[in-house]
Image 1: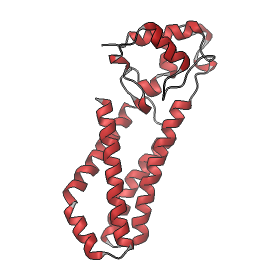
Image 2: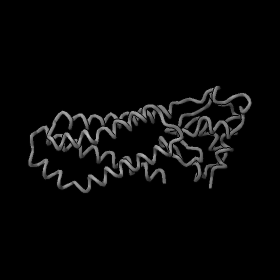
Image 3: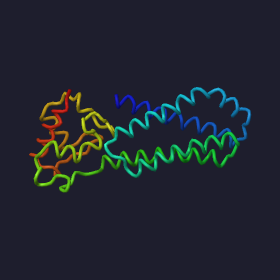
Image 4: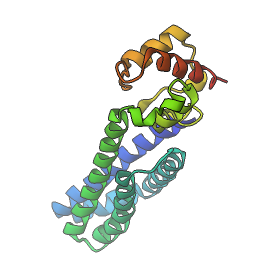
Length: 207
């Protein structure tokens, strides 16, 4: 389900941005009549896309195990861009129209930066205390939920849904050890015993 919502969000964001760009170009080019016709022609589709954009974005935010500063800034930019755009296009204020587009682009860029940050966040010794050094559950909760989620279903940053995985134990250990795009490998970070423990725990998340 999450992946479907994720791709719906991604598509709606791109369509939303494209609409903004087209309207802004028309405004900057002083194509008043074309802008009016275009705005009227896509009024309903734009409302649908905007609604999908916001609803799917809120859903994914709720599903995220943690909310980063970058995500908060992204949300502020998105919500701020809407009234800026409304005023800009209604009052034919070119500066505001351009600003709204830049805000959406910036929000999209922050989302990508946040995604890379999640993927590059290493497992550290601090996250694997000696008392639970080979506890697969604790290691998973401390380091894997940012992408896989607590139940393994989140699929954030391109992570696989562990609840439907059909991989055997050896393959799971191999992926944890050496990584598989976009997931980095943890060889040299986790011991072989810890890797085995995480693989065994992740298998318990299957339906």
